[in-house]
Length: 163
Image (cartoon, rainbow, N blue to C red):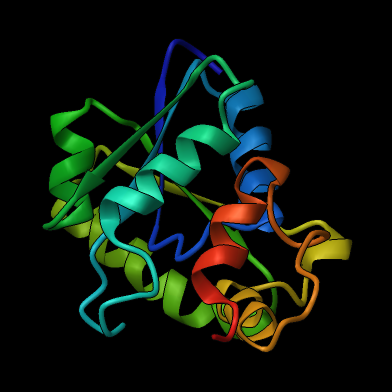
């Protein structure tokens, strides 16, 4: 694509290898990808603060030079406009993700007509993976090393392990 900016939004509580896969693939299509930690009014708090999530994402994408990390509380369409972004990138694991994400894409398009939403299907090996699953496994002492970027594995385990 041209010299364009894409936004890859999410709660990333915490970032998983599935998220990282979508981010890395997006970075191949756009000259700049901004991964933005958004506040989600439908999710209570979180296991990690916004600052911790931003830090973990920065560690995880350190080797992808055209990726920046930010956080924002407000409308995604407004954030995208402030960054001159032309696209929102959303990863889809299953058809159940699509209905909600499609509704959000139409809403963002209405709020910011210059903005497109691109859906990337997850890689087959990550279809089952979610931040919630990672948190549940880690909190029960399970091994999450295959599910999260190595750079943040210890951060996640130390926060979520029992005791």
